[in-house]
Length: 184
Image (tube, rainbow, N blue to C red; front, side, top):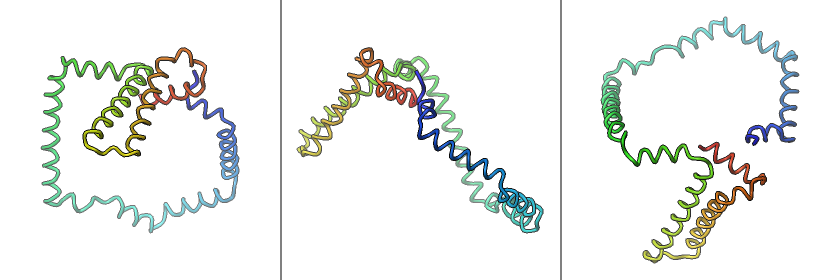
């Protein structure tokens, strides 16, 4: 299966744009403008103004020696140590956790499994939203249409993940699978 980058590189529009850019690049490399700009840059590097500007830009800022900066940096160092300790404590605590193992399994799952998961998640969100809107009394046409649209999107994701064998030659499905693999 071709990757999304290869598909774009083989596109006529992208190829035409790249040809135009390469033509302008070749023209600029052989132009007098580039020779003149290179000469000006060399002269500027050896000038007094460049020396003054570089000394001003490269000097250490005055705030580094201030008392307030030292206090802020010491507080940041305390937080850094605190979060490092929390990380070591939690990583030891989660090492045998079933939820952590399941999270790693979901992360390493295939694109079809993730697509099925996203579909079920979208359908669950839409169903929960409709139930919450019924209890809260906020059922308007716009809210219901949005919930139905999210539910249909979830249903579409589930159907695509289940019927991947039947849709194997589809270009749209291939691009959709490449997108899911890219965000993985």
